[in-house]
Image (cartoon, rainbow, N blue to C red; front, side, top):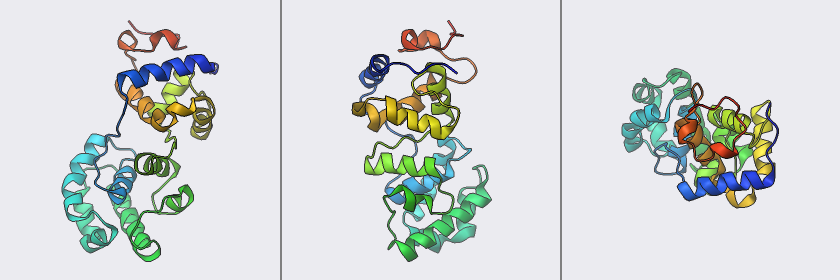
Length: 214
């Protein structure tokens, strides 16, 4: 494992991320907190592009928990059939929607504990919703962030939870809100898994990765 980068280097890295993309946005399409929650839950082991293709028509019909319940399990299943694990995800979305109607007056709760109590919602999904909808500096560590933080040295850790804590501990507060978006986008398009695009990387000189590519 690479060593933890120092404060000044991390600050410089995020200054460059900010300069290149001051307001990074998540790529999952949504119209409210509920559709964001559903989209993120559906995105597990699936691409954002694939989820967006499936949910564009779905969210026109069902953009609230009650409308989703009216659509029903079979109707939902048909809309998300192209997404991996769609049968189980459909069951979770229906169960989630019922709980939101019964226990939260049809509203999406804004605490991590309440979100994680919903079917199909783990810590990463909860953190995405908290960050994107309620502007909390929550860090949703996916495979891209886990790879980037360990490869570069921004927040090394052996587990997803360890990397999440390291981001919270080491990334300067001024960058915390957008940190996970910058890191996801960097991992998705530049610091890719098999052959990172080091020659086009704006932080290559600050990165500890030894096997840099041209």
